[in-house]
Image 1 (cartoon, rainbow, N blue to C red):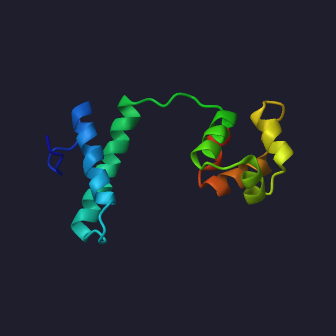
Image 2 (cartoon, rainbow, N blue to C red):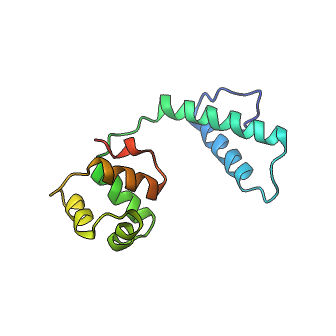
Length: 123
């Protein structure tokens, strides 16, 4: 099954999986995409997001769980995160152990460091 611009919207998990494969191929091009390919990439990305929003609900995740995930995904240490955010290592450790909550400054610094929206840390 091949996803093409005339077969949108995505209507099944198989079409969704194929759309992801096509998107991955477009994103891995060594040369820059031409205007038509870029337009298709944007349309396909939008349709993938729409399908995910409707068919793949995201479970609620606490700010602490997300922080732990982001640290692990970056393969960073608490010391590296502290250095990159200006937050004390002891504060990061206390947050991860549930003894302390993130404040606005912590959230802003972590969001900048990890390249995410600040709102993702709000439970």
